[in-house]
Image 1: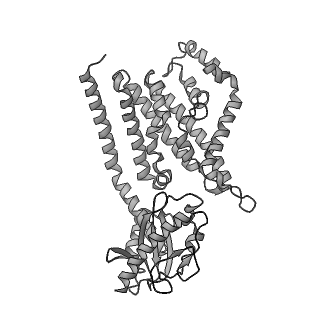
Image 2 (image 1 turned 135 degrees about the vertical axis):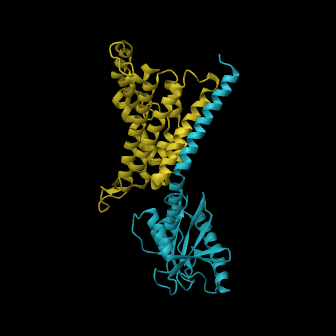
Image 3 (image 1 turned 90 degrees about the vertical axis):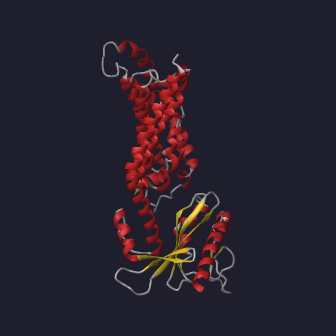
Length: 225
Length: 203
């Protein structure tokens, strides 16, 4: 409902508000986090979401990595959008995305060795994350740099938020802990190891998607299509 | 729309800029990554040997503790790490050797620590394994590793090796239910390193 109103208002509101995003900043931000949330609505990039969410800490770092990459790559792709030859635009996008991913990976390896070890190959695999490529193709190629950054931030935040939610519940139910601190004492709580293993992530992600759809209501889904 | 030459030039420039950025980042972080990797290695050896060190010690501190307490000795093609406590020039208190080999899903790597007699196991630690969590992955669990403590590295007839599962004996430990393949592979890895070690120390 809110989403539909916002979408119709986006064009009419832009002449009044002349911010750095031409008045579309808030809408873009809201879309990424809620309206077209990459994980819960578009169900993109779930591979990493399933792999790294057995603890809150790794989920947050993975979210931060994705925010960094989507913001950076969207900015650069958008800056170069008028100069990039159409035929090689996807290769150019991948090169830009890969650069940001490797920068973040190197940073983790140098300064947060333990986290880097726990995340294993999944930081590097952000290169192939559909969300990043999707935003570059669908948004950054058509929109100005600042707005593209906002879009990258919004989608990154949307991804990170879902990861944090899944990570929180998986760590809590799977180990009785949150951030490594015991919350559910093992005197009366038997950790459910299923939540730590991959199937637990499927259940949690399914629950989150169901919750999103329940709150949004079914109508909008059809409107969008 | 735009010519081929422009396309090639664009690709070339973009590629070069990305490559330069990454080269810069890699050379900037190289010393940090190297010291992290070294600290990791040293930490594994110190843990296996049971050398006391502060939890959460810095990378440099770990390397210092290592250099003060541990001596590397070549025995054939085995590198044996000997724990000689700082200031104590007497007998080593423990030895450790690295073992590695194929597990079920990926390599299994770890250290085997021995008492000074070189015939009794002091500890088994793993620093890398990708076995099935909850099944083969249990080899890293303390209940499984603690079984090895005090076991002999030779069987009743003096044959080097360890038995995982099977009849109780001086060199046998319990296997993990549901992880037969991991246990078999781990047994083969340990047998290999023990064979070499017993040969080297007999001579």
